[in-house]
Amino acid sequence: MKTENVKWVVVTFLMVIFKIANVSAANDLISTRVIGKGEPIILIHGMACAPEVWDEFVDKYKNKHELHLVRIKGFGNGEKGEANHYLEEVKNELIAYVKDNKLKKPTLIGHSMGGFLGLWAAAEAPELFGKIVSVDGVPYFPVLVMPGITAESAKAVSSQMTTAMSNMSPEAAKANQEMMIASMISNVEKRPKVVNMGIESNPSVIGQAYGEMYTTDIRPLMDKIKVPVLVFGSWAAYGIYGSTMQSVTQNMEAQLKDIPNHKLLVAEKAYHFIFYDEPEWFYSELDKFLN
Image (cartoon, rainbow, N blue to C red; front, side, top):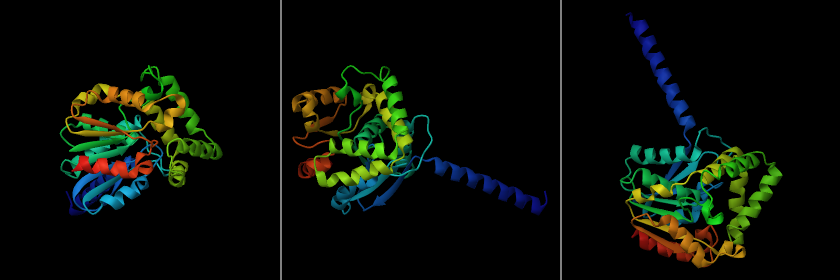
């Protein structure tokens, strides 16, 4: 083969590989920003949120931990990723991220949906993580508010929710976000930041993710988790519906009982964003667990 032809073949091959790599990168559903040095902690935000939800956490721990802040595409930004099962793909990418970056037994901390993803990842890759912290995230959250619901019976609800959220007008989406966050954060000063994250999120992605939370039940996988797990729970926001601290604790414990090494702590006054509403208690208990 002539030298010119060889060069053309090599260049063409490299261009194809480069193109494939770019397509792969464009399709990734997570990206990360690393801050600080020390033992690694992976932070996963919740539904319709962004990594900035952890700003106070970062300030507190960046001098003693290497913090990997995960950003999920479409959350807190208008980007749109493509996946048949969005959350499952995010979970798979989290596992791949730890392996690809050779992180040694990182602690994985997630809020709400992020906590659910952390539990799922730990069940799928039981030797990969060091510890798991779930902040008001459980293996199947719908059953906490709709006793008796199953992933199968939730399909109709999921479909309606996905469609409704995807087709909301900007005005309706803003009003809905403000109403939801008022029921999730008791600290009024913290609400606008999180409301804005939801407004800036991609509605079709959030709709799909919400639907998947209703149709994905990982309770049967919990006995596969081999590392220590700390779960923070909240109940105060549901008091108006008749819930009590005792009833919420029992319901959450029923979902966590198969995790061999777990501890459940339920906040006294905090709503869903526990680290905003009871920060001193939250960080005190977290420090005990991390140390």
